[in-house]
Image (cartoon, rainbow, N blue to C red):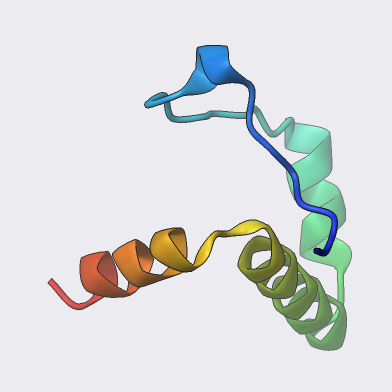
Length: 65
């Protein structure tokens, strides 16, 4: 079985949030299109790899509603 990130039990049924600073936004704005697309692709792969098959199916249903 592949390594898998397991969420903390106390986070069950909770969403998440994060803060992006003005400096982080300014740095991102300097990225090339290729850098942005590469980051997006790597992020999508990461999310896919940490999702269970059930989570993937649920996200597919949400996107098509």
